[in-house]
Every structure is written in C-alpha cells, then in structure tokens.
Length: 302
Image (tube, rainbow, N blue to C red):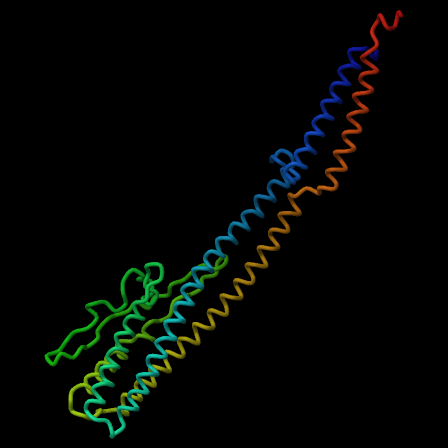
C-alpha cells in the first residue's frame, strides 16, 4: 500500500484528536474528583454508584425515622416519670391521711392536694408532641382523656369512663424492622386509677374527718405503681434497642460512603501523573505532525 501525504496528515489528525480526548478526560477527573462524569464513561461503575446511593438514601431516611422514635420514647419516659412521682406523692398523702391525729381541716387540705395531683395526671395523659397525643395509641389526634371522659352523679362525684386507644404506634427504624414507640397508656393512666383518686379526694373532703378504706386505697395504689413501673421498664428496653439500631445505622453509613468513594472517586495523584504523561505525548504528537506535514513540494525542489 502506498502511503501518501494525505494519509499521513489524516493519521496525524486522528491521533491528535484522541490525544485531546484523553487530555479532556483527565482534566474532567481532576476538576470533579470523580472517575466518571457520565454513565457512558464506565457503565459498571455508574450502575454500582446508583446502587450504593440508594443504600445511602435509605439509611438517611431511617436515621430521620430514628429522630421521631427518640422523640416519642423520650417524651413517653418523661411522662411516666412524672406519673410515678405524682402517684408516689399521693401514696405519701394517703399514709399521712391515715394518721388519726389529722383534723378535718388537715384531711381537707390533703384532699385538695390530691385533687390537684389528679388534674396534673390528666394533663400528663394528654401530652402532645408536635401536635400529636403520644398516649393514645394510633389515635394521635384525639386526646386520651377528653372533656367527656367522666360522668357526674347526684353527689357531684365523677366516674371516669374514658376509653384509650392501645394500638401500637410503630416507626420503621431499619429495612423491615418496625419498632413500637408508644406505651400502653391503660397501664399508666387507667380509668381505675382516676376513679380511685376521685374516691380518695371525696373521702378526704367530705368533712367527716376520717379517711375510709385507707388500707384498700393504699393496696390499689401499690398495684398501679407496680404496673407503671413495669411499663417504664419495657419502654427502657425498647429505648436500648433503638440505640443499638442507631449505632448500626451509623456504621452502615460510614461503610456505604467508603464503598461509594472507592467506586467513584478518582485517585488524584494518579490522575495528575496520567495528565502529565498525556501532555508529553500530545506535545510529541504535535511535533511529529508538524515535521511530516510542514514540508511542501517547493521545499522538496529547493
């Protein structure tokens, strides 16, 4: 095959074009820090990158869910702690009221305080977080103890009749894992507890001057305190599990970011070296091309 001047010029231009493309590739890698800038650069890397990014996005969503779970559990625990303190205080007052040295005025004062503590219990039961009631199961938009939660008899005594929702309020904390973040409010704010307190308040403020059925009331209060304590222990166990999930998600995030970096991030030192080598090759190609194309027929005849 006869090699002509035109063939040499076309080959030189083709090689220069490839050299420019390589220079452009290394410059893009250096400017972006990424191995590829479009899927066609390396489809395998691009597909793996999409997969790893999906994992990271899911992980971020689960971490946001964790924040909601922490909010529910921590506020629920704070509420149970307050209920425990209130019921313990009521028990102290009952023991004090059983003392036969109390005057009717003393018992009335104890009854008034118990009435206030009962109202405070209702306030805790109706605790709202971000506009939702945390002690009413899945019915988060309805107060567990509403204005119609009791009836009043002819003597003015209240009989609590409210019904609380005990359904589990679950939050997905990792793939396929649902964690219950609410408490069974009937174990904490039962209507029986409020009826006992109502009876206690009435006995103390009726002016008779004695506390009737003090031992039975104490026994009922102890049962409620034990139930509340058990519910708090279960809540603490779920909180510990949530912390384990949180730690696992953090580890998974670090691993996923490292794998994504290994897959996509460019080795800058290598890119700079390749770019320097390619610049040398390009200069050599330009020099060789100029020597081949530059001589003309006049130069030959001269």
